[in-house]
Structure formats: C-alpha cells, structure tokens
Amino acid sequence: MGPLEGLRILEFAGIGPGPFCGMVLADLGAEVVRIERTEGPSGAREDFTGRGRRSIALDLKSPAAIEAALRLVEGADALIEGFRPGVMERLGLGPDPCLGRNPRLVYGRMTGWGQDGPLAQSAGHDMNYIALTGALWAIGRPGERPVPPLNLVGDYGGGGMLLAVGLLAALLSAKATGKGQVVDAAMVDGAALLMAPIYAMKARGRWRNERGVNMLDGAAPWYDTYECADGRWLSVGPIEPQFFALLCSKLELDAKDFPDRMTPAAWPGLKTKLAGIFLTRTRDDWAALFAGTDACVAPVLDMEEAPIHPHNAARGTFAVRDGVVQPSPAPRFSATPAGIGSQPPLRGEHTEAILRDAGFSAAEIDALRAARAIA
View 1 (cartoon, one colour):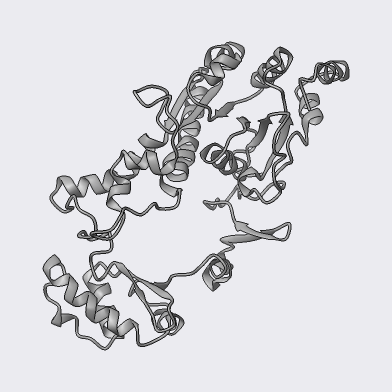
View 2: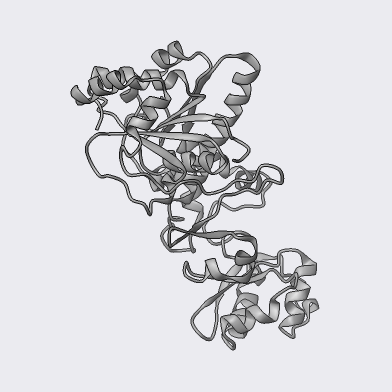
C-alpha cells in the first residue's frame, strides 16, 4: 500500500541516484520492476536502495530480450534509466521506440551532466557534478580544501530525489493529457537548484564568495559544531535572537553582552568563548541540559547512535528489517501510509513471475530461455 499504489515503474539497473529514486517510489507504494543484466554481481539483501521491488534478468544484447523489455514497457507508467546519453538508443530502448509502444509512458533519464552539453558524454561522480555548481566550493573551513558532503547533494538530493519529483510531475501531466514525455534529470542541474537559497543570499549581499566566512558555513559562532569534554560534538544553531538568548541563559551568560553577534568581526571572539565553555562538560551532559528547549542544540550522533535516539525511536525514523537497521520511508501519509516492501532482490530472482504477469506464455518464456535472453 501507499499513495502510489497501482503505479508501475520499470527501472533499468544502475548505481546511485537511479536506484535511490526507485526506492523512494517503491516505498510510496509503486510497483517497481528492476531490469538487470544476466551476468555480473547478483545484488545484496543489504542494498536498501533495492528494497521493495522485483528483479528480472535480461540479456540486452539479445534482440529477443529487447523485444521482451518493450513488451514490459507497454504495461508501465514510467521508466528509469541512468546510462550515458545514447546508450538506450543504441540498445533500441530509447524514448522513441518506448513511447511508440506506450504513448503515455514517462521516460525518466538520470545522468550527471544531462542529455546534452559539452560534458554530456564525460564520466563523473557526485563530487564532480557539484563542483560545477558552486556547492562544493562553498562547503569547508577557510584556508582549507572544500569538503565533499558525502554523495548526498549530487547523487541523492539533486539527482534521485529530483528525478522522483520530475517523474511524478510528468505522470500527473500524462494522466491529464494522455501523453507521456521524457524527463531529463541531471545531477549538475539538481545540485545547482539546491543552491538557489545561497545564490539568493549572495545576490542580496548577504553571502560572500568565500569559504568559512558566512552565516551558514560554520563561520558564525551560533551556527557551528563544538567539541565537548569527551571528544564528542554538539551542533549549535540558535540563529534567531530569542533562541540565542536562551542558549546564553543555559550557559549562564548574558545575551546583552553580545550586541554585535551578527557582525562577522565579532564572531571569532564569541566562538572562542563558546568553545571553551563546551569543553567543560560531556556531549550527553550538554544534550540533557538543552533537551526540550528552543536553544537549537543537538548532539552530533554517529550511525550507531542515531537509530536508537529517543526521538528517532519514537517516530520510527529507522526500522529493523531482516535483522539490519535501515532508514524508514519518508514522508508520512495520514491515509495511505508508506512502508518498506520486500527485501532487496537478487539478480533475476523474479524473472519468470514478471514475464508471466506481463502476459508471456510458458512457451514464450521457454523460447527466451533457449535463446539465453533471460537468466
């Protein structure tokens, strides 16, 4: 169940943002079928981005397999592919033949650089894509190298998540018009879009084109992390004056002693004072002191601690499935709750069942097997 129940998605197996998009849609109730190669790694049950779907293995070098894939397209609402531009066309599975079989199809394309432009055919990874948007430049301490924010900005926020939004928007259009279309989701475009608020501050003169000198990049003493007596860390973010006043009160300081706290020139002195105070107690002592207040202070948890934090536990932000901890689906729905579906499939685990569901006869499946078009 879920708000997308009844939606059928074909996902051509890939890495990173494509599977993440498929996971989001599957979590929300869509039926997602992953088309995988007949050879290569067989998938892992612990690959959470593969959860909630079935897998069919097709040899896409075989004309019979291409025809089988096109028959699956006929019954799909949307398709996800993450190859370099031109690969699906060379396979005979590009937008033209797929939309020819199913005019209502939404054809989702996930790449780093996009379907066109000087870099369209170049290899790259998350860090490369966000490097061209200003995002990577802006993250880090002054005088130090830019810090990759894992691969969250390009692959997932600006990639897979934006593709999911694009697919759902195009599906609404297809429902209204009866016509499908191609969704060109590029990580460089999505990462640039995520930077819109920062570029807006720059346009208003509230963001300097430097690292570690701005309100949200760790320069401000009231928006940074602080080491505690036990070597662990606190996040401290009381931007608004009333929240900063509460922070000061808890630290036995007087907020009136810092009238220029919004002035960058005053930041180093205040940061030094706060750093010295936070070093006097452990992280969990500070967390207990600030718990339930509006001081905007929270402990920096590692990946072992986060799933068992009382707030996360109360909301079920993480789930234990098949003996392993993984993030729960999000967001929450009042009438059509999302949920974790089946465990991630092994490669080709559901090949015959998927073909039968698509209307293939036993003889046709035997013929595909004889032609080695399926695993």
